[in-house]
Length: 75
Image 1 (cartoon, rainbow, N blue to C red):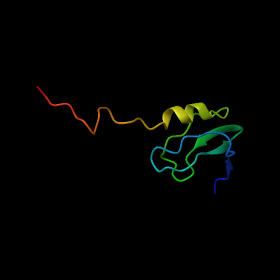
Image 2: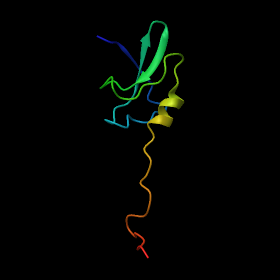
Image 3: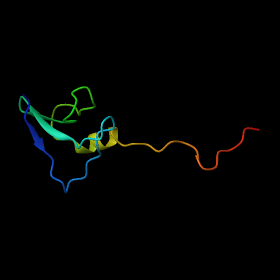
Image 4: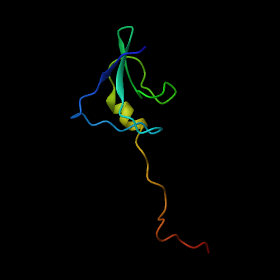
């Protein structure tokens, strides 16, 4: 069973885009990976140093394009 290192609460991390879980750090042969604790298939950073910025960039939810309250009519 994999053992994970919890990321401190005072460090901002985007939740997993797939399931909403807070990421954890996994150590693999002397390198570190930031990943989702729920599923191995969800996004994880490349092995190396702890890269929370990459995690936040890839898991940022983007708002939908357009204005749902006032859609523009097609001409």
